[in-house]
Image 1 (cartoon, rainbow, N blue to C red):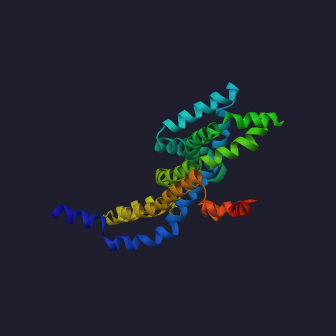
Image 2: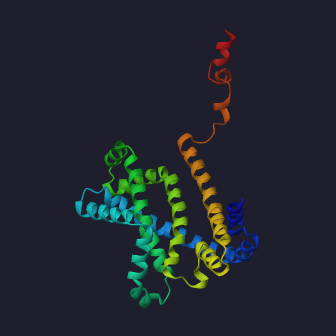
Image 3: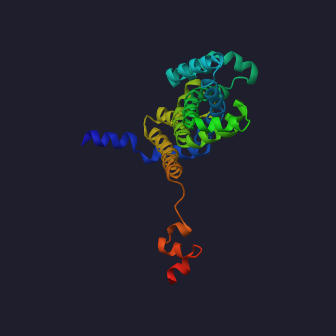
Length: 260
């Protein structure tokens, strides 16, 4: 029983969790959400550009988009964060001073854009080719057809995958601690790590993990709900649920036919 007791005392010290909880709620949770949501929005904007460039007929647009996607999807997230956060630190010092927070958001955005770009590309290419042909036949240019017809349909189809990428960003935000954030900028994992280092107990890290679960599990169910709605539509209501014989009575001449 000694290993179980050691495990319990190391990771389930409720007093250590209680001490770390206020700071995780007031500092760690907002910073984690800011990192993830901002990176998701910036990554989505750049991802749409990458997706359109990736399916362009112009190779000078298509090839750079493919190279960008391959590089940032292939590099480990930690390597990208260090590359941006440390490599561009002198430039960041000139623009906003000794604050690594924007560089962390930039690194996460670049990572997210590579994945989201592929998600958008697959969604756009899943739209039937006849949609584009019909739009062109109505007088739309290629760009107008993509912007008004194809891309809106593609975005609707990739919503579940986009939410999955947001979940991944929430977890990847824990890697920004490599850049040495200020005390007021620490995200959940960094706060848990600091408490674990100060107390010699890992319970605060487990508490940080529980916060990540509290954020990602509901989003997972949101993904499943969205996917179900997009696949099957809204539940049938009204006349569609009625008995077919009852519907026949509402048809013109149906009453007379029943009388005969």
